[in-house]
Image 1 (cartoon, helix red, strand yellow):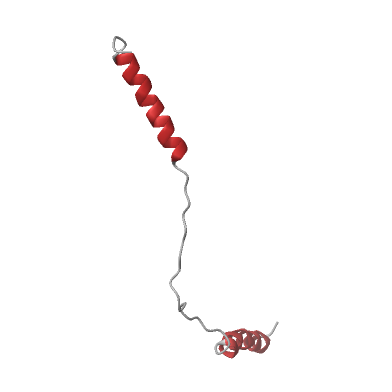
Image 2 (cartoon, rainbow, N blue to C red; image 1 turned 180 degrees about the horizontal axis):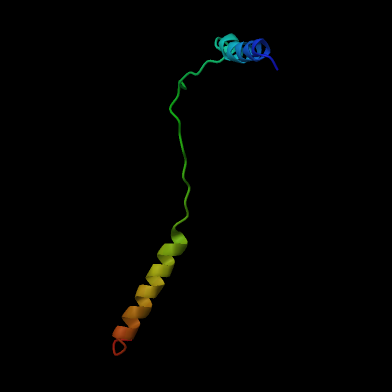
Length: 64
């Protein structure tokens, strides 16, 4: 390739973003973004309660 051919290609590549510059717009949403996190923590809480209950029964065997 000659220097002129490379220069024309670079000019064409540089011109593409300039030509598309008016076509791309970014706007903020008019309504707030809502992220719903439905996390089920029931299993962990039950596990911890069961573990605590087991420890309590072992530590106070005379009561039970």
